[in-house]
Structures are given as C-alpha cells and as structure tokens.
Amino acid sequence: MSHRELFDSISVEKIKDFVSSGQEEHLSLEFKLIRDPRLERDDRKNLAIALSGFSNSSGGIIVWGVEARKNADGVDCAVALHPIEGVALLLSRLNELTGEATRPILHDVQHRVIIVEDDKGFAITLVPESDSGPHMAKLGENRYYKRSGDSFYQMEHFDLEDMFGRRKRPKLDLFVRIIGSGKHTEIILGISNNGRGSAFAPYLAFRIPAPFKFNVFGVDGNSNEGLPRLVGPYDKQWKRYGGNAQVVIHPKTTLEVASINLGLGTSNPDPPDEGVVVEYEITADGIQMVQGERKVNFD
Image 1: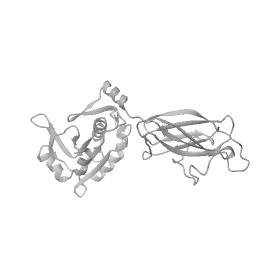
Image 2: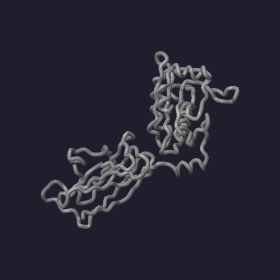
Image 3: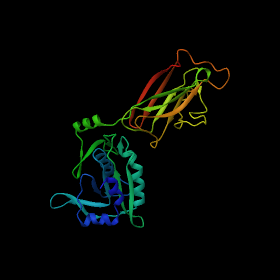
Image 4: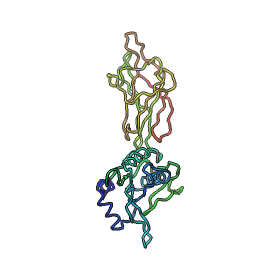
C-alpha cells in the first residue's frame, strides 16, 4: 500500500485496530501524542523532526493522538488512544506551521482530521519523499534528520554530502523573446528553469534599458503579466515581480513575466544597432538570488 493509499484509508476503526493489534512503528509510520492543540514547544519540535526525517527518507505517515511505547521485545508500538480535544484548532496549527517547520519548505505535506465526537479526534499527516532535500528541521531545531527503522536520527556530515549531491535543484535564468522589428520591437522577459527541480515562489526584477519603456499591455496584449507586480525601492526603471508558493516553474519550462517596447507613437525610435543590456535579479524559495546582465541584440 502506498503512503497516499494509507493516508486516505485511515479511519477511527483503523486507529483502534492499531492499538488492539499492537501495530509497530516502522520506516513509514509514526505515532505521536499532542500536549496542546495549539502546538507548544515539544509538539512543534516533534512536527519539525518528523517532516524533516520523513521527507529526507522515503516519506511517511504521522498519526497524532496515539501513544507508542516499547514492547517486551523493545519495539515501539501503539499502546493507547488519546483523542485530541480541539482537533479543528490542531489542524489549523499544523497547516500554519508546516511552512515554518523545514527549510527548504515542503509544499506537498497534507493534514486531515478524524472526528470521534464534537471537536475531539485524531489528526493524520502525509509527508511525501522530497526531491529537493535535504530539509532542515526548524522551529528551534536547526538540524537535519532521516528515518531509520522506527526512529528519526540526526544526519551525519556524509549523509548531507550524499543528499546534496543527489538533490534535484532548479536552475533559473533570464528568458528573452523578441517580437517584431524596428520601431515595433517588443521584448518579452521571463524566467527559465533549466534545472531538474521545480522552483516555487519565483521572483524576477529587471531594469528597463533605454530607449525601451514598460509595456502597459502586458505579455498577452490584454494587460496581463506572468507574476504579480511588487512594490520595491522607488526606481521607475526597475520592475519587480513575485509569486507565492502556489506559483511553480517546473523543470525545462519557462514563465513569461513582462514586456517592454519602444512606445506606441509613430515617432518611436528604432532599437539601438548595438543592442541593449538588461540587468536582472532572479530567485525562488530556497534558491540563492542570481544577479546578472543579458545583452539583447536585434539582428
């Protein structure tokens, strides 16, 4: 059974069966108690460690509200149910803190609750294996973890070297596309991802080179742009754009963001024979900012 299938299948009856059968914790299953649905210090620590450990390994499921202890053979297994009062608040806090629990951020973690009665029940968390790790546990931890057997352990230096070597990283660059010619020359600027990993929450800033001007008609002629415009330090020659974590540039794809042209009047200048230089800044979540210049020729 896949992690997703297990996550979707867990019910009150299945949780009760975990205890009655003495279900052992294993490589992809962890039981945790909750001290407070607001997630106080120890609960936040458990969340950060579990997200880091599962994502840096092969993924897994956390069942919140089940006590696990070592049995006679020294194996951690489910021994008691502790339904959580205020489980709706717990779900809200899990969703809120997931974005703060690791760096880089994990975007595919999911939480759901199982109600026993009123606002009392259990919570289930699905943590997929990540291609963008290693992920550091935050919320006061600032350490990297992996899953081994039924436990999380702090990663050694050689573990980190190995993961960084295998990490699928985005590689972002300025995208340039030229439309038209002469007085009707238009330059489309955007972000290309030439890496093996996806880029979340992309950011692009660029300086408009003379004699070009900002094109108010956007990239599609209907005033639409590829990313929301941001407010930054005042400089009318610089334009800044950024998206939230829901905006993704997948590997080997391009996001066209904005357009510049020579103006709309009949007295437009021709583009310079020597071309123009576009200064730019590009980054995304967990990616070091790239600053550079791109020479744009019109021949």
